[in-house]
Image (tube, rainbow, N blue to C red; front, top):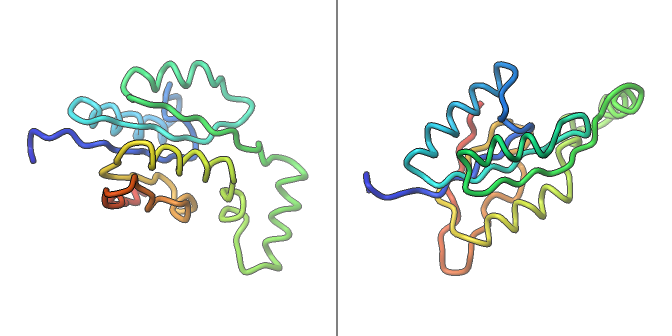
Length: 147
């Protein structure tokens, strides 16, 4: 298997490229290094203040496919109200804020379109997404939580 290319899907809470802070730099470095010998698919959430075209172009330099999913900006009073709601709930603000139907649809599309060997998840709150999906006749991908 040393010469076999793997198809690796990275799921992150923000686009890793172009990197401008530490966590982005770490994920960017990992993805671009693995992309030298493997096919890398990047699926990331993106908030309105980010430049989607710039992120897609930068990730496209090492990803065979880039999927950017719009995420709400969760700032100010809205964020505080949702955090307050979480105090009276069994579920955290973070776990609720990453339950995005569009993200779930994007993951199902990416995972069922072509067999994926490994899904690398960059945030624990994203690990509950539908990651065991695969095309008919193929095993589900191995899941890695990289935190």
